[in-house]
Image 1 (cartoon, rainbow, N blue to C red):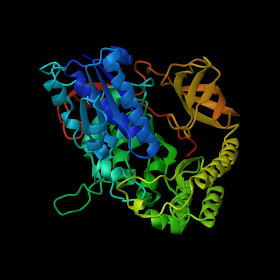
Image 2 (tube, rainbow, N blue to C red; image 1 turned 180 degrees about the horizontal axis):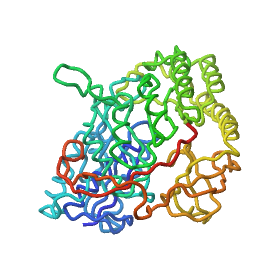
Image 3 (spheres, rainbow, N blue to C red; image 1 turned 90 degrees about the vertical axis):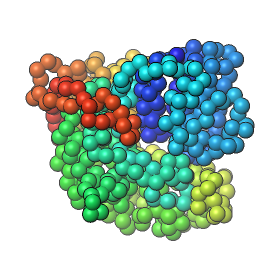
Image 4 (cartoon, rainbow, N blue to C red; image 1 turned 45 degrees about the horizontal axis):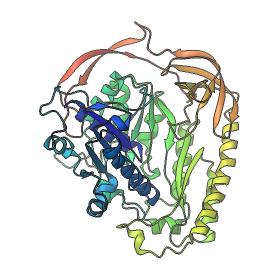
Length: 487
């Protein structure tokens, strides 16, 4: 059976799709990029904002056409949008054979078995917790928790993903080890809020036993993955313990994705956000003092109900003052079931678009200034491969997260996954760079015998989170160091 996957939305959906692919592979499923040859097409949907819902619906409709034009025997729609709108979608989209919300995804295999599409018995004891389906296998995402407890007024994530649940520390570490075995050179830690990790993992006395800094320390100790990146961490979760680990562990790269959403206290209050302007300012200052070369990315929303011209000016002033490296900005759209739907959407769409354009132009200038400060200095870079459009070898610098922060063009040819030291000498098209390679820090694949040898216990069978149990196979990995990133 050939399976075609369409994954939409965030990196957390990417992790989920990799787990589904692994499950189907155990029953004879074979991944294909050619949808007209697929026996089953699975659309993993996003329901975060209206634009994402439209994209998901369009993808489902397009998948349904392969039942007439290709080999498709079944279309499966699953994920966040299905969790929220299953009943109306079932009525409106008869071309879909199986609907599975985020709380029902364990039923994927059984639903396909019932239809006689999958092999009746598992062909493998386990093909792996996750099977990669992208183009850059040395860059992977590691989801450490599910759901969210914050209850922001504009956000439907708790409606789609449920309350916050931390994955067990041992499970997360073993999954990271498996990703390393599969060739991961960079892992991006993702969750709705990384800082909430462990708050629900308590001992018999109700005492929290593990938090994010414990997880980071364990990842450094128990894997040899050279780049560990933090994505989606609220400023309220920046603690002294976390700063100490990030500042002292050179393999945790100096990068932070820290969503603020706004800088006006009145808007933040209506949004039901846990921070205020003063606390955000304080946490940014603490992080930059502890990790001087840190790059901080954020997101913000314009046009939230009640946002005045003064509120918007406060946001712009704060961005100018704080000088984030990158900002992702969105115009507010009301989402059914959220608290903000009860508020009057009193900012016109024309004003929202105007503010979005203004803040985008402002941040472009800020980013340009921040990037100019990094020229003429030496930095480590992780090689992605060869750019299809230019034929030039490309890499990413510490402040360039995968797929969102641009790329760096190199003056040489290096294997994907190789870590090089570069001198950054030019900004290209606002967000990309050109750099001269000064030396190779670590080749990939690693040279035999390099580094110290560390015995790993790696997983073979899955349990609680699509993660793993204590069965394992013994392999040998190399412990490496890539320098301090200027810390």
